[in-house]
Image (cartoon, rainbow, N blue to C red; front, top):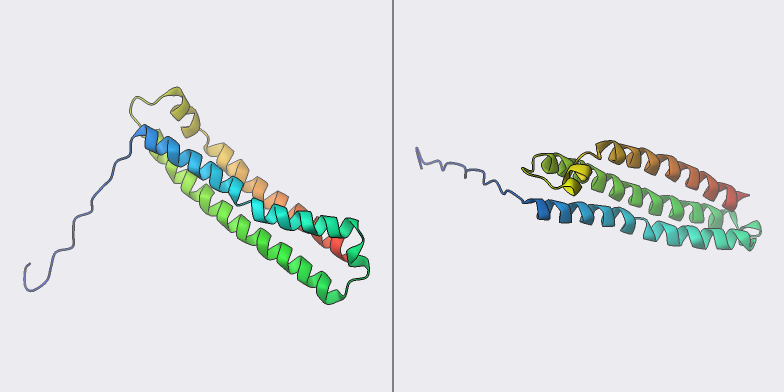
Length: 139
């Protein structure tokens, strides 16, 4: 302490080995998959109801509510997937720094373009699916 002020604590760096980084990579992949489960269940329900003709006689309020539920569920999934993609991009930078990396680590570390393609795919497919939801509900 000098002049009554405390010095800020020094930053402590934690280094992760290759196995920890690979486990994190697999966790990120699983998170992307799990983020799709709830929207998939909502879509199944919407499409089953649409196929049965339920929305033909439904009120406008029920139709708009269905679209809003599908949109909000999908939006939350997209946000989750983008967060995972962003974290995975940082993880790839760490994997690129591993000394004496295995072939698997090198392959995963070189997949930045795949992550970018995944992000584009999430957006394009989300917009297409939402358009189909609106079309199936409103007819």
